[in-house]
Length: 67
Image (cartoon, rainbow, N blue to C red; front, side, top):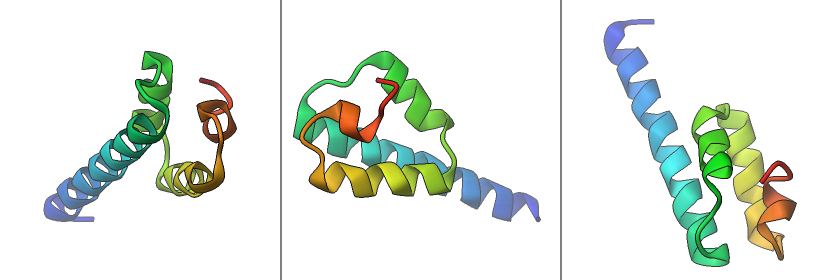
């Protein structure tokens, strides 16, 4: 992987994490710092899973069980 590809992937990951934080904040209000940290440390697949859960969840705990 080239440096440009690595930087692009890192930017994409940050964008996905930021989007999920925004989505959860709009839906549930302020989210706990540990949840934000977990989101920013999560894999692409985990972020996708959490985003899908957020669509039907009634509480943030249904999205992020560790929050």
